Amino acid sequence: MAESMQGLSRTCRCGELSVKNAGDPVTVMGWVSRNRNKGGLVFTDLRDRSGVLQIVFEEGKTDPEVFEKAQKLRSEDVIAVVGKVSKRAGAVNEDLATGEIEVIGESLRVLSQSLTPPFPIEDKIATKEDDTIELRSTDTIIIASPAVPGTEREEAVMEDDLYKESGRVLDVDAKRNFTMHASIEDLKMMIYLMKPKYYIPVKGEYRQLIANANIALGMGYNADKIIVLDNGQVATLEDGQLKRQYDMIQTDDILIDGKDNLDASGMILKDRELLSTDGAIIIGIVINHTTKEIIGGPDVQSRGVIYLKDADYIVKEVGNIMERTINDAVAENRYDNMSCRAEAREKISRYVMRETGKRPMILPAIVEINTAS
Image (cartoon, rainbow, N blue to C red; front, side, top):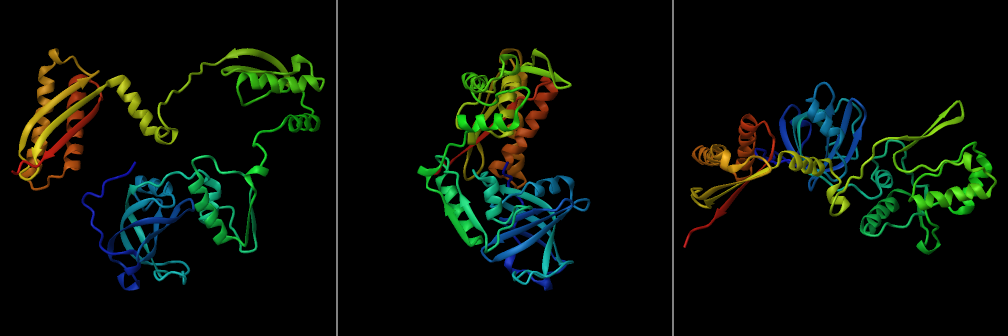
């Protein structure tokens, strides 16, 4: 999840640093050009308009939470790093203007995450991030898989990167591509070569499993040697023999509305689980955009948490916490809409937990209105 850059200020750009800055504390921001995880060390190439700078995160010397975040960085993530400039202990990278130095990362914020590419393996190879495969100028790349509908633009970018790194790229015409699924003749060839004692069709709708099983029947297999399993069914084999085929494990469908690429993250599912068990509290308040004076609210709405008529004091205190948070921030000259909402969310969450034993989703909203005539 993207983090706020509240309280951070860039001290310099990546390409502006040199050996003269060794020992200086710096705050740099930019895009991840390349990230290499070497186990106890993570090397991140940070890019901005001035150049590229190597950031080093070392396990044991870096905060564990920061090191874990560094391990998960990927190409084109936007990050902010606080650290100290150091002269490189290893070989100098003569291809970089900053090749004599590196920044030892102390803290890390991911300001914006890049989308997962639809071609993760090919994308890593093309951007030189794969630990196993490295392209050479003499290599020939054959792209045999057609682009999945909706990913044509990403596929074109990946193909451009492959052209830059290899000597020859061949793109097979989509009309000449075969389906990615095995044909009947492919399955027959597999059965003929493998000669399995038992044949278990996998993947597909139940009718497709039956059609797959019929291929084995047609090749002379008896029905007791063909195992067709529905979701949750378990077949037990011991010493090469089928013992049981009627065990069941509990399985459930996970239903997610909307588009997969928007709903697949664990945070979305966690939020939905939270809403289904502990409910939500929404707090709305209106303030003057210029003076930050409260001119409306707070209005507190509870859904699935408490029965309002029986807990009027909780609702009032939630509103009071929201008001105090804003007034204190304004008085201390540190008001920021986003940070105030985050602070109020934390305080209200602790209070509600103490009073009700629940952890509902807290949704504070601060609406700023310009009342100038």
